[in-house]
Amino acid sequence: MAVANCYYRTTTTITTTPLKYHSSQFLGRSSSLHLNRRNQTSIHVNLSKISAIFWGQKNPATPQPHEMEVSLGTFTLAAPESDSQGVSTNEMMRPQKLSLSVVSSISEIPSEEWDACAIEATGSDKMNPFLTHGFLSSLEETGCAVKETGWSPVHIVARNEFEEILGVVPLYLKSNSYGEFVFDHSWADAYYRCGVPYYPKLQSCVPFTPVTGQRILLRNTCYKDQVFGKLVEALKDLTAKFKVSSLHITFPSENEWLKMKDHGFLQRVGLQYHWRNRDYKNFDEFLMDMKQSKRKNVRQERKKISTQNLTMKRLRGHEIKAKHWDSFYHFYRSTTDDKWGRAYLTRDFFHVMGEKMGDQVLLVVAEDGDDLVAGALNLIGGDTIYGRLWGCLPQAYYPSLHFEACYYQAIEAAIELNLSKVEAGAQGEHKIQRGYLPVTTYSSHYILDKDFRSAIGDFVRREATQVKTVIKMLHDSGPFKEDVLKSLEE
Image 1 (tube, one colour):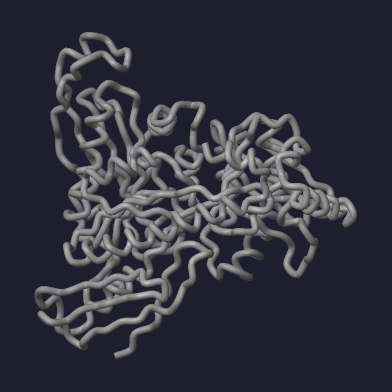
Image 2 (tube, one colour; image 1 turned 30 degrees about the horizontal axis):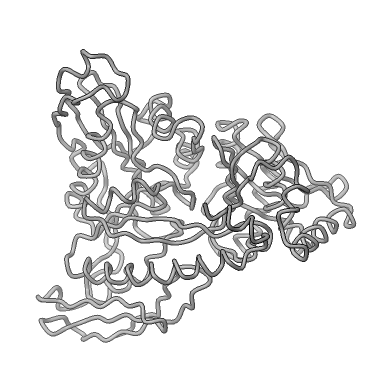
């Protein structure tokens, strides 16, 4: 029996070791699986019945959405008790019908109706650009988030009796765990060793994008709380209907994460590094909040850019030409080929996304004379700049250029645009000394099998204790003066 080692990752600050296991070649009443790590976080599964005599297929065929029943049922929403949303009395006096269905492409939903849900879910001042129809449709249209890459769209739509859309959920049937940034490879390995398929699974998220945001996108009506509940239960029903192992809602808002617990979801936490704007007027004012040694280090890093004769530019919307996207794709592939080993995004994606998203796109480029040598892609939301991708010319080496393009330029842009924060993507403790502090991220997991649900539940509870300890430790070691650090805790 050949079983490959699998690695589980939480954050780059927690030691990761090969998983150890105990299992029999066929599974019976006494079989067990015990996955553990040096830090004592473990998954232990006891099987109370025979699940399989021999190993099952590791990657079974993914059910096709068009083969499934697309309707998830019709429900009656109760008339609200009070006018808390400013709606008409007539609307409040009567119940309303709600129908839920699945679509296999976001193109089946009018962009203006999807975006109305995305914007009203948070308010325009906190709009998340990754949840817009323009961004998600770009992923589908250019072959990034499609069946062939392991991302079959199965978005859920909630309509009232007048066919008006009251809510949507970005949802994908996954045949792998790539491009998610909440790592569950050890869970998949545990299933496999027990002869139980983990894939396919359902995933509600923005593909290839570790950005926190609403996942249940609702119009701001007096029925929205009821619609939320119906959509969450529909997600669980779809998990059973598709006969998949599990449902994962990754990087939801904290409020959604808390509500999901009441619906039987396991709660998991992670961490990222974000910069917060304390109403700075300029970059130097931000630096004055840092300890002297850290401030000096940042200034030295920024000085290296000019001494290398590099010119930094921030381009938005129509300023970004086709040549910029072609160059950036070249930079992106240089990064993926050297580090990640997998390019999730196509060349066409950048062109299509740039055209659809307009001024919401901020592309930072570095020029050496007349040549583009590096770039960093950001998207601009209601109150946040989201740093996403970075790359430079293959074999090129420009000291401190990565820090300048990805972190310092984003901070300058946020100050200039009077935005509240910069989210600089997943992982990277090196961000701390450059002004980005650790924050908690969230994910919710609905596991159908009760034995695995119990084991994974124990795992995520132990993991959460460690993550919280790491966040506190990293926060306290930040670059800011003590009084500033305390204000950033509030």
